[in-house]
Amino acid sequence: MRKPIRFCTVALTFVLLSTAIFSAGCTCLLPSPMPYGPKVTGDGTGGAIVVYEDVKGDNQHDFYAQRISPTGDTLWGETGVLIGSGYKDSDSFFDLHIVNDGSGGAVIVWSAYPTKPDWKAAPGQRQIPYLTHLTSVDVEGNILWQREIGAIYHMISDSSGGLIIASIPEEQQLNILKVDSEGNYPWGEDGVPVYFGQYAHSLHMTSDGSGGVIIVQQNLTYTGSNFEVFVQKVSSDGGLPWGQKDILLYSLGGAEEVEIVSDGSGGAIVAWQVESKDIRVHRVDANGNVLWQQNGVPIGITKAVEEAFPHTPLLVSDGSGNAIVIWEDLRRGLASIYAQKIDADGNIKWQPGGEEVCYIKTNSSFWPRTAVSDGSGGAIIACSYKKAETNKKGLLVQRLDTNGRAVWDNGVVVTESDHITHVISSDKQGGAIVAWGSGKSMFKSGRSYVQRIDSNGKLLWGAEGIKLNE
Image (tube, rainbow, N blue to C red; front, side, top):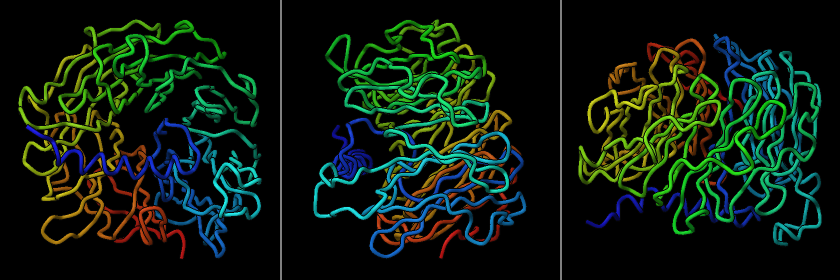
């Protein structure tokens, strides 16, 4: 059977994103954070810190950070703290990031031209350098330090007030940098070089819980015939305890859309899509031992439902070696979202084919989808939708408990606006915080919003959320 629906809903999105990335002069590696709009991180107490950009005339962009209390009060002034300004001809694509510093503040990444360039010239020929900045903001909104850094493709917290960054300063050169809470570079300003194949895609990282990082990438190497899955670890001292070459997790080819989360014991759990046939999951321990069956545990989606065409998995860890995989498939003719739980030994825990998370009659994908742990063995999933009958668009959030049961009935509608994208963060109280951009077009958002949903599915910050800019 042909698979035109899956191509239209997912591949079209990929083509649009890729076109924008290549036009900006980036490499083929697609970074992991969601594009466009604001970014958010929980502050650990039920509140949040959000970074957003405000577009002025003549392509000037101002970047603001705002802290919001658990009850929804803005703590850093009406518009937040101005952390920087510059020029760019589109919204921040994949170059706006934020991580919690563990002390009520955050470290933020933003990028822009310092002065107005010649927009008619190609991105790499504009004479003025396109600069990426790291900005540390404390609990009161004071800027502690700023640094300039190379292109950032992904970053995570180091669990000690700093961050770990995947940077590619030159084509096919992957460096892993660590920046501590004072803005220093413990692994050197160039970081640790890590093997990076010629056709690497979908690089992701997770903390090892001890100041190091575990990296996963899908790569066309070794056999040279198709995409395989590899992992590598950089320890807290910048060493490579698993050796110079990556550990091969999957060698059968056809791997796509890799994801990685911590297993809570210094290792990691990895998931990937095998073309449109199934999703596989594997686990590696802190010493680099591959724990589950060769080439990973198949979820068995198409074994349960022959023509499901599963794709784009998400992965959530419960911190005890178990993981929840969330994906989209077409078993009901139109797109729907399902989830499956795998325990620490690689056993499938929920019903064959997975538990249904969300079904809305839609002719398009639920992209983007995001997910976080609910802190109780379940997950909170957010997804965009467009109803087939009315074309009404919105953002829906659903919670699954530890047994795979949908807790919030048919889900909680966060907004019915024509939002562009969203990000999600745990509120560490059993709920989640969602930020989204809405407005102008696919590549330019007009307004930024943030909302908190508690463990019972109640919207805590007003019916429409908190609007961050006018």
